Length: 304
Image 1 (cartoon, rainbow, N blue to C red):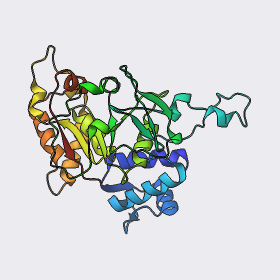
Image 2 (cartoon, helix red, strand yellow; image 1 turned 180 degrees about the vertical axis):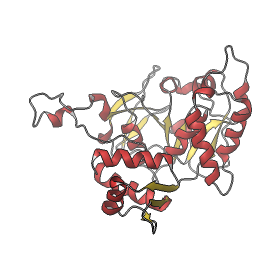
Image 3 (cartoon, rainbow, N blue to C red; image 1 turned 90 degrees about the vertical axis):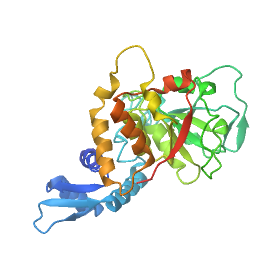
Image 4 (tube, helix red, strand yellow; image 1 turned 45 degrees about the vertical axis):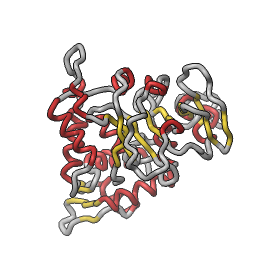
């Protein structure tokens, strides 16, 4: 799939995550013809598709391009080392060296590739490791973290009051913590997401994000099994200096969640948190959760 068709398709899938319609066009025809995606109506005015079509296409693109079309940018650049094989300028059309790496940390020893690595006794962000060199993870769970500050302050997370009703071998004191990455051209989130999703169905996946509409969206689209968030969402209204700003900057995430609610036949756990956020029109960052030692809980996410 070339970049033009990829970007066109990604735009449609992000606007219609459960299915929908695309107006007939040259790109829509190509998408249908080349990837057997959706069905044209009798008048040939719209290409209609459903969740099954989306999942099948996502799987095919993952196989051919190694990216998640619903979230990842088009892989139109290569590494500098690969590029050096054919070009005199190794930087020509190359992505940043840091793109191949992920930041991981642990509260205990690091257990990857069937080897145990002793953790540093000093506070640290963790270890930058080339993602494709990690073949196996021997931790009981992987936690995707939204903010970098969390990675350096894992010991401040209040894990004592986590719900123990979930019948799964989840012990966050023995988790592998994975930084989501920065949403910047030189430090994209693609590699961390790809690494995270690689272990889907093998190890429980948890997303730990801010308590705000964007944080919920990140959890729902990350392919995590659980969302780690406040046990008492009403704590979002805790007394803090300054006025609320973030809620009013997140209209697109709010719209996304409202559309998600309409597609759910039964109310999902995250929706109760979203209801409370809408009531208070406030948000709370992960840094607040750490500093105030707020109690956390795991909410099950229905994988769609």
